[in-house]
Length: 439
Image (cartoon, one colour):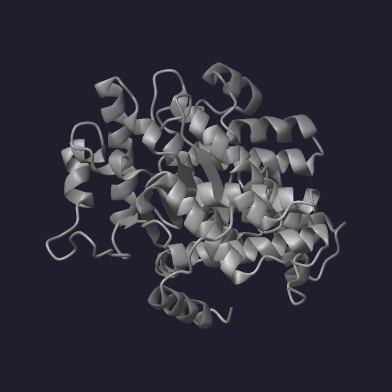
């Protein structure tokens, strides 16, 4: 307990989020248990992306199995490794494709959540562009030996900006993307905030009509439902060219595509997913990672899931030697099993200590009390397979809050006294597991 050192800002986020039953944005490394093979697999994907490759992964698991947690912890790892990241949850209003702007809504959500190591909470678009321009200015000053007021500085920086932009022009929609980047630079150079803001609005997909875009920026196209994914590929190339490792997209709640009742609309979304899969697998996208979370039903249901779309099923289905129970972490699907009872117990130990650290008291719940709490949770739900980490964590945080706020109450009074000792082999097995983690 005394060795645990976590900033108050992090313990606050952890305690508040877990009490509310949502995944924290920060501090996840302090409560992570299990998932080592899954994380290592995705870290290998990141290495490939940093070298100019691309990756596509479906993270599947039952509700409460930890999909959102895994996506969030990978997002944090990615920022630490100098990737640009963006995340969004799909919903009836946000899809991959839609007749009422649902695809564009997903793009806007991703762009609003654009994050980097120095701007982890989203809204990093302007910061990324400013950092790019400043780094170019510093490079020119260093190479030319000139100061910030030198007349040739602006011209040299502009030339380098157009060099990066020209590399974009060979890509689909690259010409217009490059033109808007150059317009942003002109706004910066002329201290014209209106021009800069119009450029940012265009890049965020906020122009409603081509006429409006042409009038403001001289660009005859806008980011819309049909082309938003092409611009994500451009963003991946751009971030890679200005010093970041690449762009990673984390898209959760894929089950909302499965829930689309109109079969044509559902198939259109699956077709867009197929395009994303093919682009990343066949080398048509560079420095781009796409990670999508969803339930097994979303993927495997042959009537409405991804497997109902034959082109996707043939690409995603496990091969002859990767059948049930043999998780292939190098394949396109990472299927999460529920955390084991032992892993959840380790998680409860971490939460006990973090709660005590946050509120400034000495943790008193003993190991056998945590085991008893687990037994009660399993017994209350009636079946082991129904026990999810999310349910256990919310109940446990509730217990910790109550015990802290009402010191007159005891653990035994709230949870109930233990009626029987656990079988000896189970205890030994658990002791061995905990010893492995130095607990």
